[in-house]
Length: 163
Image (cartoon, rainbow, N blue to C red; front, side, top):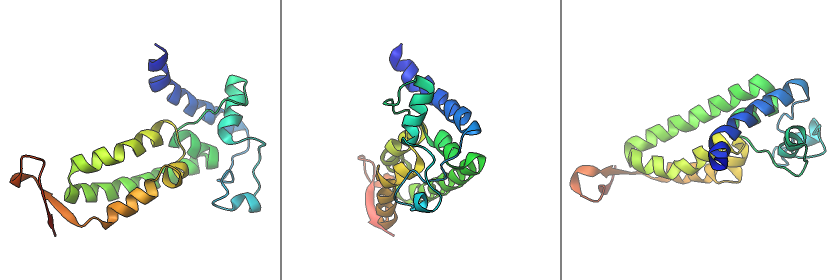
């Protein structure tokens, strides 16, 4: 029962908790990361990282790191504008993957991308998935692949040929 709750219900609940908290508290506007240097310009409004702020708010424990996916984190950064920015960016990534799937095979792209999409939907901010989880590197490497898979020539899923 606990695993079912953790996998299916807690991520959705945390998205709502992020919405509830950041509807009445300052947004972070991507200042929680040293990569973007916005913390020097705007200033980070909290003493703890965002997941720990939510852990303190919802679980009454600042040591609890209440991570959420792109919906909650997008809202934490810039409200509904953050959701729109994240949705557009994710849409562009999915469009790129769709084009690559036509060349490389949908099975290959689906299997290789699935860890990133699971993390993005359930437990990590978009910028974390891009920079720390390796999505940016994955997209770069995928963009260098110039072969097609011809499934009609092999029982093992296809042969590779340049095109």
